Image (cartoon, rainbow, N blue to C red; front, side, top):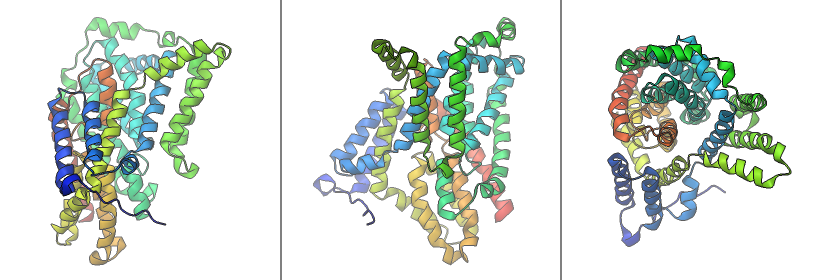
Length: 448
């Protein structure tokens, strides 16, 4: 039996669209104000969605993306334990020495690496692996970490758009439209290659040209022996083996019928077991080590996601996302070229404001329904590419536009690095518009 759509029953008979919109705007306003911890704001907003009747508790729980939460928690545990072996310090020094300890060179290298990894892994996973390396490098060179972290967020969302498995919206689109991994490589990856190249240039012009490390700092990094960074060789070998297995499982997730959250949590559990097995007769010592590991989980980010998922699900349940999707399509009067352009830009703008997953879920049946009016399923293929590019790249517009953005912000803030909504949007919105403009030109020249 199919699940029936949830019907909101708002107190005093108020309009659920108006109420959910008010809660969404109030929560976003408080986040932009940046005077209250964003996890508190999100939890208050999510709770209000339930208290006023936009959602009930069971429906709110359904709106939480447990796969994303499992992925975040699992990868944070893997990174926490691996870091203790010196693995990330080794990778950081090795990378810095390959670029002669040039901050601009490292900025380019880390962006490129992040984009490539994000094409074959989930982009949240990628940033959780890259950011610890980045923080070690910037600390050794005594350069500001924010430009590196910002650039990696952008690269992760851009790279993730290139393949079927790089970003959840692409997985949804591929499944709904029966599009293969190779289809995304052929039709989306060329646009992403151009976008990433332009992004590298913009990042260099904004920050790379001005990044300077003192000669003493560069000499100190070049003189370091990266092998001396490994303080626990046995733990390093175990961490590498488990991280390698986890990454391989991410790549093979679809044929294995496993979700990334399950893979990450299982890998984390195995590494925790290996990390504690030597203390199998010392329960108190195990408790101390496990507690230290769990303390490294960024609970602020985890609970922010919980609240945000509930807020966005409330907006979705009220019908706002479906209404927005229908208005986008109605504005084009079923003209194929105009529809493609509206979907691209509309998806980008909306995905910068709310999570792109529920929006893409609302768009998929509407695009499918347009097939008979546009000459059949084969004629709506450009619409799928527009939806993919708009939804994935639009997440770079604001700090809350994509999961990777918030994951990096959480790590940064735990390390004492400011990562505010307004600062991110000041740089991110313009760069996002440039990337979507390039995608517009690409779609126009190739398909329209």
